[in-house]
Image (cartoon, rainbow, N blue to C red; front, side, top):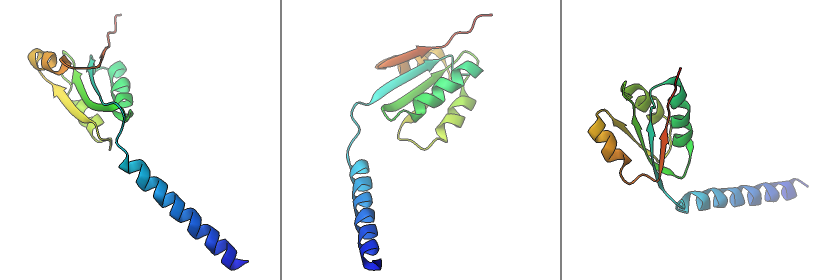
Length: 110
């Protein structure tokens, strides 16, 4: 009985390790460049974090009139493959928008 359980556990762990290696070895499908405009406010931080956690996002750009170094720093600590860019000036924001597949504009009116 004990040898049967041991064999079953070894087979299961070998299959699990093979599946985990296989999952990391396969490249992701599509890679998206995403820009979030208005990322500094409380409303813009949540979509920034959600986009950072999305495995399809390879490059994430932030821009806000008030500046976004805090948001970019907070989101960059999340351990994913996507790169973070903090657009400080309007000209760098325009260059980060160029080539984006998804552009999210967050606007809050009182």
